[in-house]
Image 1 (cartoon, rainbow, N blue to C red):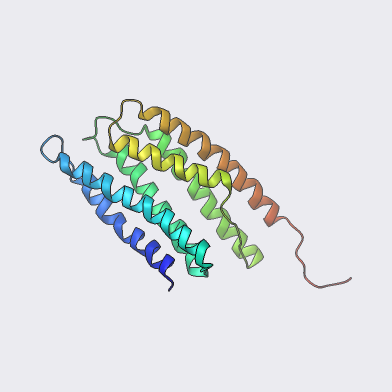
Image 2: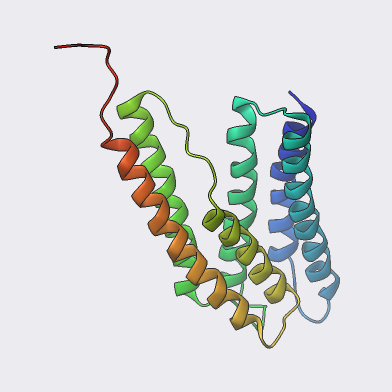
Length: 188
């Protein structure tokens, strides 16, 4: 396991602590938990950037890293959208439809990747510019809600737009891969 994968694993292990701080948050008597959740989340965001940088710089891309890095991102982001939608103690929360769009996109991408792997016995779907913008906008949306910013809706609308655009792009790319001719080596 290379260093970048260890950072991704660390990010995955922070998710239960992030969720716990949100579940036990009560305003105003346990306001510190909201800031602790924010700190854990920002640590996750920084670790995402660091592990990506290390993997690119040292050329330590590995099959485990192709799973661990996006898994860490998805677990952190999905838990944030779910908790910050459902936990009533937060005055400012994500509307249910925002969380459903984010979760639906990731579920569709995951199911599509499984289908491609079953059919093609291989999968090599790399993140796109749209996917990276989606992740960044979703991270900003969660941070803005954790900070309880009155204009947080701007960030979640931005996240929704990027989520939809990247979802459509990944579906298009996945269908192209799924229906591309297979090189079987047969000549006749």
